[in-house]
Image (cartoon, rainbow, N blue to C red; front, top):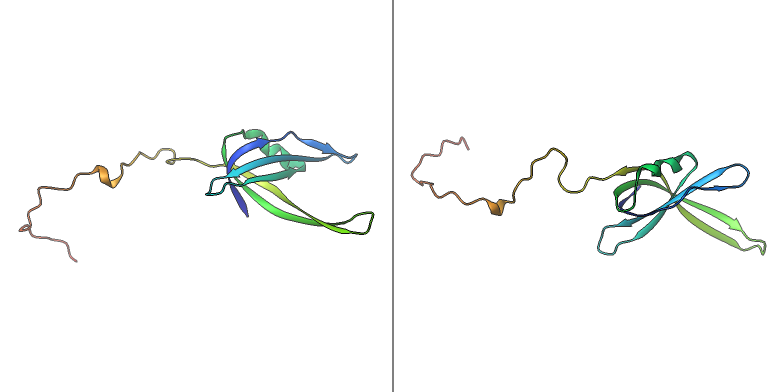
Amino acid sequence: MEVQGKVKLIGATQTFGSNGFRKREIVVTTEEQYPQHIMIEFVQDKTDLLDNYQVGQDVKVNINLRGREWVNPQGETKYFNSIQGWRIEAVQTGAPQGMPDVPPAQAFEPATNVNEDDHDDLPF
């Protein structure tokens, strides 16, 4: 799965416990009729992937949905979901690099030197 949008926030890397578990969060705002602010977490060595990105940049993030079950001390079962990123890449906006800007069809004038008596030599 993937999420595409504009980077709204990039958090600092957090380290937890004695085993050195690392987590870093990014918020991506989708660009649709009703924009969504999606928080995606990167863990362990994937936290370094966010170093090359900044707020306002258009990105595409490959994600996995994670779910876990937890039983609290009172014996109630709770469920938690998370969105975990494993790849991120910049998205080009506008025309691709190296491609000339092509004017819309309305910018061209219709041909006026057409003679209906000219022979059409097309084979179809």
